[in-house]
Amino acid sequence: MQLDPQRTDDLDALFEHTASSPSAPIQPVAATVISMKPSATAVSVQEPFDVFQRIGSITRKLHNALQELGYDKQIENAVNSLPDARTRLDYIARLTGDAAEKVLNTVDAIQGEQDQVDKSVEKLRALLSQTGAPESPLANELSTFLDGYSASSERQRAYMTEIMLAQDFHDLTGQVIRKIVSVASNLEEQLVTLLLEATPPEKRPFVESAGLSGPVVDAQGRNDVVTNQAQVDDLLESLGF
Amino acid sequence: MSQSVDMKFLIVDDFSTMRRIVRNLLKEIGYTNADEAEDGAAALAKLKGGGFDFVVSDINMPNMNGFELLAAIKAEPALKHLPVLMVTAEAKKEDIVSAAQGGAAGYIVKPFTKATLEEKLQKIVQRSQTAQAA
Image 1 (cartoon, rainbow over the protein chains, first blue to last red):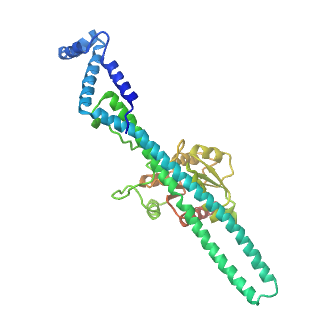
Image 2 (cartoon, chains in turn yellow, brown):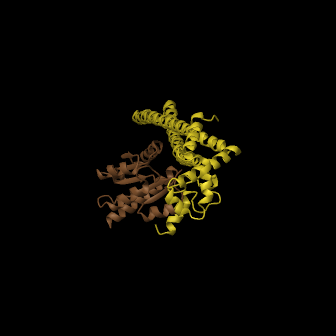
């Protein structure tokens, strides 16, 4: 994963700006930190900018420490990789969506063809019963064929329904992908904030769990979710619905 | 079945794939009259236009989700008689309970089968017909 040099520069510039002040250089600020300990309020009234300088100084130190340890690069790597992960997920969502759509279109087309052939078969069957030669070998053969075809057509329709229903994977995977993308966006936002503030990561909760959860990806060991329609029906019945 | 086949359905889902699937299934079951909406807000606008007999709705949708749509339908005197069948991937028990308490006519968890949809529809249609007759 490539680092964005622009972003690194921006962050450095921000820290520079936060930490430095035209009126008071870093060193005197550190001195003030010690001196104001006994009476913080009194000092802050006298020097309203002092507290910002202190925060700037602390941030600077933390930033430097993180930089020395290499954590800032790691965090930055993580931040930079998130948009990429999102793009890849969007790609999956788009491709699976296109594929499902194509299958549905094809199923529609096949069902249309079946309707046509079924109509012709019915017409032929009617014609066959009208004509006065039902006992001829050809008529018998034809009649058997038409019956066989109709039975097969019915099975084909059932298969088509199965194929069509299987495309609901797009809805289900799509919802999961959307959820992950939103978690990734959140994570990214928080990591950026983290980078800017140089706050230890364990103080920042990333995962947002509010709202509807979408399809259950792993129901094992959970008792707050149902895993099939029978459980839905049982639950509703137990409530008197 | 003759009367119920004329029923007009509104299919509410933010995924076009799922709307198509539900519409096709309804057609196979014998209900050919259906319209679609991509979220609760669009659905409510269409429902207020009148002419619908049945709502099949997803829950997790942008703008207005299925629960909000259900509440809006039940709060509207002209619409509250409409049966609302939830068809959703939300499998949390609390979601199922709140749908039932909110006045949903049925709850189907995705992925589902044609048989499940058919059975729930029949049950709901029968129930509403007996309610009308009584």
